[in-house]
Length: 496
Image (tube, rainbow, N blue to C red; front, top):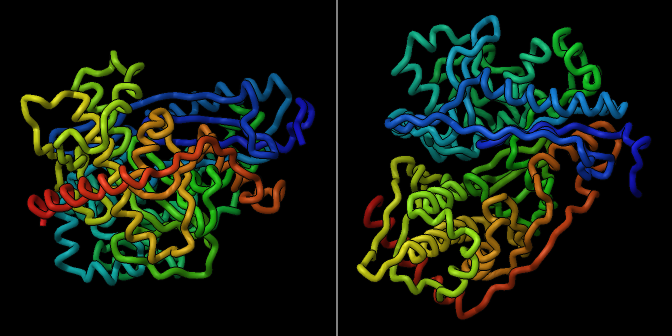
């Protein structure tokens, strides 16, 4: 079925707040982007020498509003009123607001590592494995328990002004409607949420001396708001009285958006960061140590591992090694090099480590440099090093989801470098299929809205387009096992 202009009453608008950009895209009833109805704004987090990664909350929400201004004007011109609005945001972010819903703190990113000592204190005070078995999260700077404890100890005057701790999606919803809920999806990435009970974790709230009123009320995805505050109803008449759904975690949306929604298929995503994830419906889960567990909605669980260093590492090397001018030749240059032939071993931890050992203090290292080493050697070795980290995650996923046999590659950093996809296939020893969904998180959120509105019975029934299949080479796979072993030995030497 194809849609003409007059058929576009069953559309949804998807707002995707990522770690480096904001997008607003309108989708039709088959989850295809509608031509001409999209807007995009790029931004960067502010960083500090002591490990801070943050952004001003009003600045970020204003970028969302700019995108909505652009799309809403086009919707009005074309006489289209979307049935719903879905929101996808990056997980593990934290913002404190006061009684008037004004920001007290900046938005702290998952990449902010200033809560390292607080994370260590939590490890000493609590049984981390017991907490992980409930929350699906370890004590790490990425998650809220360490961040809140760090703020309580280092900035008590700031914390005293905070009435509620929220995510960027909740803040956006509060700005638009005057009140907000926290979806099970966003709550599941906080480290404060009991995954099987679908409620805030009582033990952690007690340790942090938090009352439930200091967190947003919990709700499943199918709890929309429709009455925009007068300011925004007047500003975007095409979006007034549409069903605005609570924000979802971008990782879970990405899995659904690229067609990875069952136990036989994993999503391998490399954007700014990286992740390998499996999404499926079930009543409850047993969470393997070393992996995390989150939700898409109450009935869909997401298990996997994440890397802090994906496209971030790639871009940093291109700039630092002054290879930006050679990007056009990048594929040919790197493809002409033999696997693991550079003599280098790299730990790619520019922003610390997450899965599987969760050592936030870990930092990048390059071993084996000689007078013969070139920038291209370093770049190739770095791409391989990231693939080795994914191999560690895959090793933990295999017993947890034994039916897994397909891997779908997504994310801008990975899809722009086909050679990197081939390296992933060779390292993992299994085929990797390139996704042809340009904005998987955005599409996944749109699918959830289409499902909640009853426009489709199940978002998983709309297939996601895929492209080239990258088959592993046995000889290269064997060679890469040597590289994995060297990386593990270096890791143990430095961090174990």
